[in-house]
Amino acid sequence: MTDTQKLKKIIQEALNEDVGNGDVTTFFCVSPSRKTKAVILAKENCVLCGVKIAREVFKTVDRSLRLKEFKKDGDKVLKGEKIAEIRGKAASILKGERLAINFMALLSGIASYTNKFVEKAKGTKAVILDTRKTTPTMRFLEKFAVRMGGGVNHRKGLWDAILIKDNHLRVGDIIKAGRFNEDALAKIIKMIRDNTRLEIEVEVETIAEFKKVIAFKPDIILLDNFNVTSMKKAVLFRNSNFPKVKLEASGGVSLQTVRKIALTGVDFISVGSITHSPGSIDFSLEIDE
Image (tube, rainbow, N blue to C red):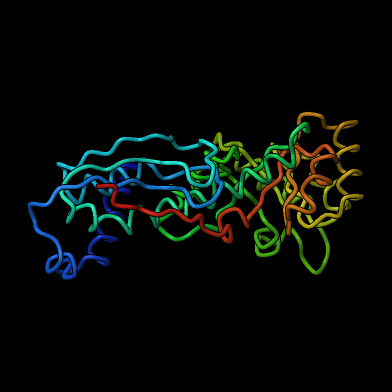
């Protein structure tokens, strides 16, 4: 299923949830022949995301509706600015209003929050990444919002990259009774390289684990919950001995800590909160005539 097909399916299901057998309030209050114009306004400063999805919502409700965009996805928008204008049957506009704005509120929230992290990391080499901490069935939209905010998408799912995490290390008997089995990791990495061309990333929790893992030259090493001092040590060791291996910092990254982390010299910083708790942006739809 393509992203376009996924979007259409989500929109149709959301309309079924919201409209059900029909918009009864509009049925009694608004003539089916009444036409109007409405505008979508930003009620706070934000990085915009979701205009194209709003267009698809109104198109699904009524193909005769016409939407004119004043701003595009990825734009920085100020409070009070017009985002878009919709013309056509008033009943159709009212039917699609809440769903269109809900999408924009959620996705603009992600884009805006992502952009705050991106701005904090400016001037460093660190790239802000998202994670798999997304809303079920909404990942492709939330990852789109991350890109609109200036972030970069990590893997799409479990199928498009190798990320050997702490639980894999334990269940796979690479870490057993507190001891690190380097031979077991060597066999797994060799098997992966022999059978796929997927990027290999390995998570470590200590400098000791880091030095053992980097010897196998994975594409990326994930420094999980390292403090800044340990990150600096890892970066210095990598730079001196394995300069091609990339380093990713992860675990409890906040707007207060991301700048210090970026300045350590890591290549990537993954931030779960940009998709699991960004907050929404406030928009309104106002009938203009």
